[in-house]
Amino acid sequence: MNEMLWVSEIFYSIQGESSYAGYPCGFIRLSGCNLRCTYCDTTYVYENGDLLSIEEIIQKIHSFGSPLVEVTGGEPLLQEETPELVKTLLCENYTVLVETNGTKDISVLPEKAIRIMDIKCPGSGQDHFMDWENISRLRKKDEVKFVLMDEKDYQWAKGIIEKFQLRKKAHILFSPVYGKLSPSDLAEWILRDRLPVRLQIQLHKILWPHIERGK
Image (cartoon, rainbow, N blue to C red; front, top):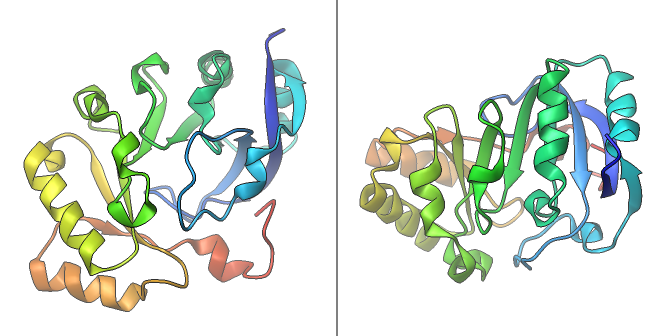
């Protein structure tokens, strides 16, 4: 519990993405990111934030009274203390989601954690940083997220799903880049191709469109 982590923010909100969308959730947004996606909406995590102990983080999460917690970033796996934080949360009987950009080895996380792993599409400008070995590390309760800029990204994502047989490995999420790709267009493509993926729209962008942090 003495380990220290750089934390950008800790807040209580509605889970806006993933299969858990709509549930109240405590969020731990860790500082630091090794990518610079073209559509990034959390550039403030590039700064260090506050250095907090795991005990301080857990105390704040306790105050929310929610059984669901997400550890996100930035890229949370840049900090070697993150698996210990996740382990501690699991020991406190939280359901723990970890959102990661897919460039770091996800196997370092405890078995009971639910990994939500991005697969970066070409529109992000960062697809060449992917650790493709992570696909073999997925479990069926994990989730894979494609954030799509346009139909080129959509077609690319379809190819990746087929190449790696992703439907057998994890839940698949398709998310349109806010303000760049119309959710209705993405919905039409999914229906047209009868693609068995979950369309997700960032609920927090709809609920609090003018708030950039803490929601």
